[in-house]
Image (cartoon, rainbow, N blue to C red; front, side, top):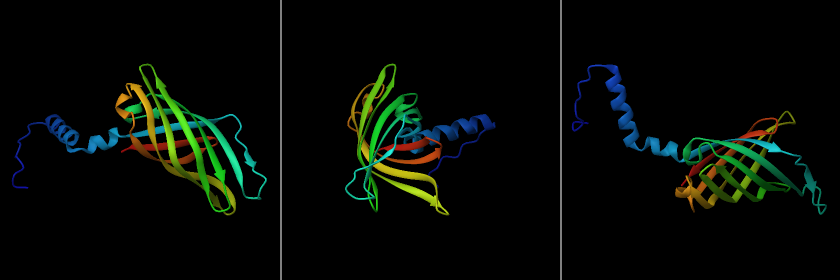
Length: 170
């Protein structure tokens, strides 16, 4: 700490400016810039369909649209489709892909893995959480820096047919 310069500040506005500049140069802002929040809504019906080979084996296809907040995809609209396979002990993602769009920006993603956990309280369904990994398969315009980047994501239900996804780019 002895090599930290001593700065005399005459007003709090100058101090705030110095602190914000230090924060921006510290790398803390870079973490936030690599994270995107998706506010999503399921569209259309998405029934759980039995495979018929055993009682607990089923499939669910979900179409959604999302509005992106923050990070490199801020302001884009995502359309996506995800297929979940229900098994006796786990719900796993068979496929998930989508496209982010806004004028001058387009990117397509493909998820490589995902799991979903149903939540119950006193025997009643109360929500779900999910997590996984993926990559940006193609990107152009404002999203071109994401081309080929990998990411991890978490998601949770926030209401009837609505959910939020937090994506962090590697």
